[in-house]
Length: 175
Image 1 (cartoon, rainbow, N blue to C red):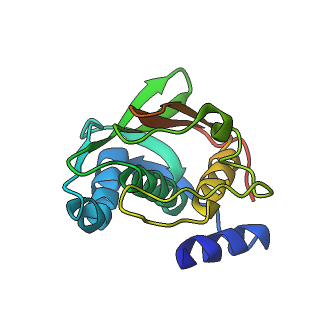
Image 2: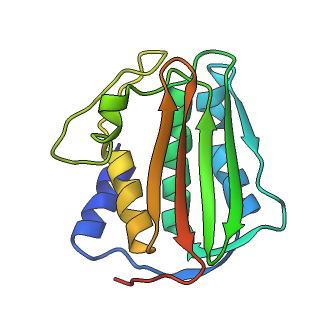
Image 3: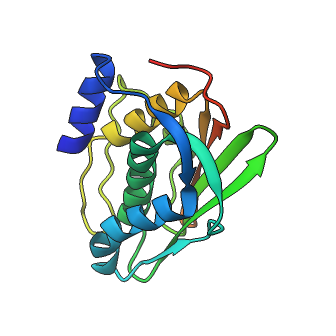
């Protein structure tokens, strides 16, 4: 929560540096999954990096780590004991598409639109009573939009969720 508040505050004050470059996405995802290993291990959840080991993208490394960390952490939070969370990536035209998929509890359709709005409070306890503020997803959306990309959610209650986002191979905006 404190990391998210600090990054969001920096973004709002335009103090966060945007320094895109070429990144090995496999290695970045691997680093993020290592950070979340303890949280996932407590629930016996498998974290799977499906990104090809030579997959490169063009992005701000710190922002991309925050985006993926938040999405994976949320996936773990809403996945039952013994579940699974996958991170994958594909190239399409001039974009990189990244997805985080879980086999967790899913999201009710009426709540999906509320996920990325700061004015709408939506806080659901995780499968082990974990709490959250929703700020992480708002930060993800803002970082993705700063890259010139988009985020979307597909979810089926009781079956899981897939958070997918795109970032262009060359950022459209800078700040």
